[in-house]
Image (tube, rainbow, N blue to C red; front, side):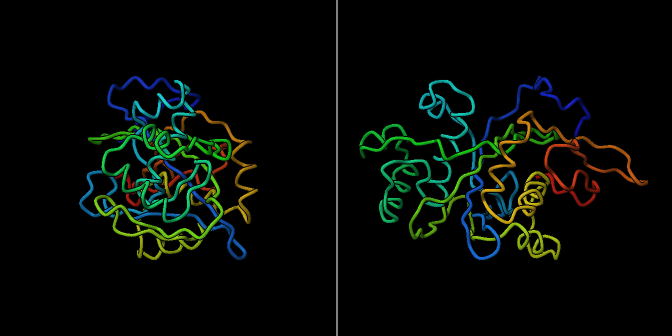
Length: 257
């Protein structure tokens, strides 16, 4: 279960936290922004069958490209994982075409490092358009526990085909935050607790500009959920004042992995 602790940058004293990054990739469509979400295959050990934002572990190569800067390394990981999972080359310049994005995706999935790939292709990283949105570190009794940076970015200009990484994902879609929340509420889709809370936060915005303004205004201290008694039952809770309109959910309905 979650352990309740102070959330003002609590000491992450457990040795098994895995540094990770995920990318909230948005585009302007109609009245509401749309975000790219992917569904993990049902046999995945973590969040199997759940809808998430593209992302994964931060590795040593990400830190090397970031010259040791922690936030930059998370941005690099978000760029790499998004390329691996859906073939969209966020944060690369000059901007590859959709076709080249597929070539790059195949290369990284075949084991080419991002550093070698950008060097061979005459590309460079451009992380200026990627903004930290939140940092979550749930303290759950699970085989894998992640200390995850949520990053926010606009999809690059162009008409991008989504090429789903078959080994980890079953499908992908562009959706407004509100539409995905409706699917989750109806039982048509599922999402883990941090994803739901971030969708609720994104659902407050009528433009990506609003999302970026909110990202800049909020603290980046780790959000460490806890469990406490509320209204006669156990609830998973997060702190108030961090931009989230919903700060608790009954334990029985909170999907944690």
